[in-house]
Amino acid sequence: MGTTEQTLTMVRDALAPIVAGLGLDLYDVELNGSGAARTLRVTIEREGGVDLDAITDVTRAVSPVLDAEPTLAGPYLLEVSSPGLERTLRTPAHFAGARGATVSIKFRTGTGTARVQGALVDAYDRGCVVEGDEGRHELAYADITQARTVFEWGPPSRATRKGSRKGASA
Image 1 (cartoon, helix red, strand yellow):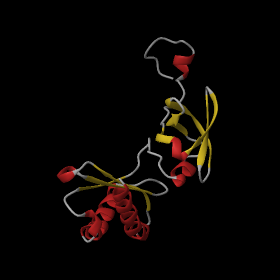
Image 2 (spheres, one colour; image 1 turned 180 degrees about the vertical axis):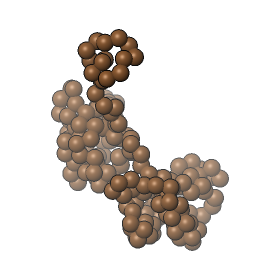
Image 3 (cartoon, helix red, strand yellow; image 1 turned 45 degrees about the horizontal axis):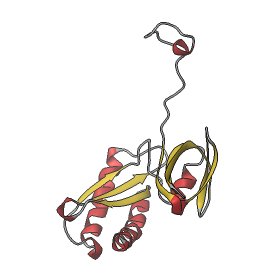
Image 4 (tube, helix red, strand yellow; image 1 turned 90 degrees about the vertical axis):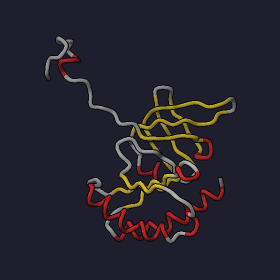
């Protein structure tokens, strides 16, 4: 899959200044599927969120650049979106931007894989630190197979905590 990573690097490098010129940040670029069923997912963000106008502007601005990108030969579906509440973490910058958030991380161990969920307390060039119910985990990015932020709904309502009848409002 080295060729796919090279393609994605070239696409990121081509799109980042265009997206920045529209006042947005390029969060990620993914290429999923194969053959005629490929999807190029361009994820954008900005302080305060991304609206439909921003997505439309980015789609219009990047389409001609992608059409001229020789490494993207063949058909694909372009999808431009925001990362959403639960976002995939893949790069050191993604992890650094998620400091303080609750994360779920699957990682390789000496005997297979494990998963940890907890607060992302630190992120640096080669790894991150997660504190969960099972303690503190220092994880190298090279060992992480899947990571994402976890959206947590607010605390239970007062009615639920006080044991009030079901359906009562707080």
